[in-house]
Every structure is written in structure tokens, then in C-alpha cells.
Image 1 (cartoon, rainbow, N blue to C red):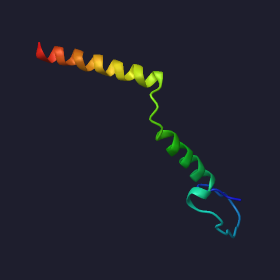
Image 2 (image 1 turned 90 degrees about the horizontal axis):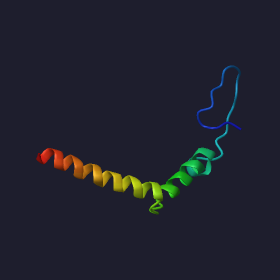
Image 3 (image 1 turned 45 degrees about the horizontal axis):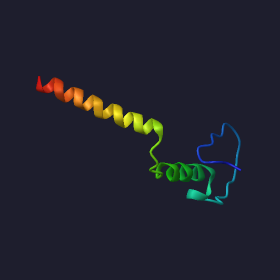
Amino acid sequence: MLFAGTTIVNGNCVCLVTQIRVEIEIGKVHKQIYVASQNEEVTPLKKKLNDFGEVLTNMIGVICVL
């Protein structure tokens, strides 16, 4: 069994493609990452980063006005 990106150093081989796209292991990992990224739940870290971004934006605005 070979996976995409496997490096062969020496020898001969005849391969038969049995699965493509989301059915392969890399596809499964990609699908899990995609599903996790669609979750719009606001975590404590996201909330703190958003608050910090707002404060930073306000500070920069005040500095620009001055």
C-alpha cells in the first residue's frame, strides 16, 4: 500500500489505484479539518483576540487623529 507523496528509492513496482480524493487517508484528514473550520463557535481565545483587536484599532485611530 502506497500513499500519495511516497518516495521510492530503488526497485520496480506495478501499482493499482484503489481509492481517490476523500476516500484516501489524506482526504479524510482534509475533510476533518474542513468540518472543524466550519464550526463558528466563539472560543475564549477568539473572544480575547477580538477584544484586543478592537482596543488596538481604537488606539491606532486616536493616534492617527492626533
